[in-house]
Length: 399
Image (cartoon, rainbow, N blue to C red):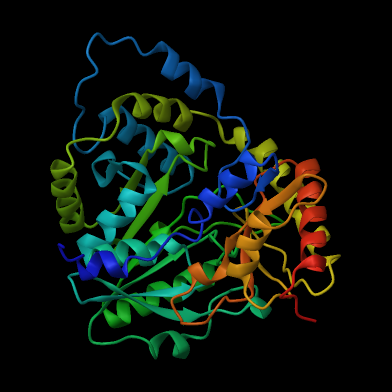
């Protein structure tokens, strides 16, 4: 029998999607599953984007430019300009979702055997794409007690090794919801300059901040133009996850040249979806006001409900729409599976993402889950009722 490659064997399963077959089986039994495992918002996609799909009338659905449609690259550059961030269209490369942008960024920075630093818990695909490329992820723990803000510089620098090439991070963060302050991003910039590292900044949740928190972009750092690659996407910004349109943004000419050659290799991003993305990027900033208000209400309802459940630990996220939550269980992976296979409350159950998949440290996150507050408040309240009942009945509950 042919041997599986070591790379394939090491590839981790997604904590976000690995339980999907069990959720499908629960639905087949007639159980309603509240999907809090994945960042798939139920906020309506802007009508301007839907109309852009409907109005596409080319006689041939042809290849587009490898770097993306010029009109979209220009629209993204204008979007950054409205944020006070100077970006040229030539510094934008359109990708098949933020996932491809992340893969291209890591491949531009790292050779096989190199390492990236990441603050755990971190987005699971940082580790997944690094593994595909033969790159190691060296974790730096952050603490729930600190709301997952950055540890001191000496803690970060202690993890810098001879093959460390960069730091990958998200702010606002998936999975923690932390929004790094300007001084924290500036600390990362200073460390990058000191140790000759690249910052791969995942900023796809930029607009979703609460309670006065503000997104400071790595592109705003002074003296770091040559060592910042930003990952961006329309998926969450415009509730258009199925569009699969993302981009890299960097002012480093060498990285741009390398990313363009990777774009050549995969031919082009989807043409029609780019037309829809153009419509999204032309929306006024006021589009986000009701969206942010809705997510704020969902966050507040979720956290209040979680804190009312005995033994559950939950902090208040500052941005994005996720929370890392401590549960009074022996093993969150086993509990999440049990909730889908063995349990229902009034015909309903909850699907969550086990926390261990957001860590690289063995054993970390074993009693945690990531919850995405992407459902309306009444649905969240029913999900919380099912979670409370499930925790009370779970055989592996801890005090």
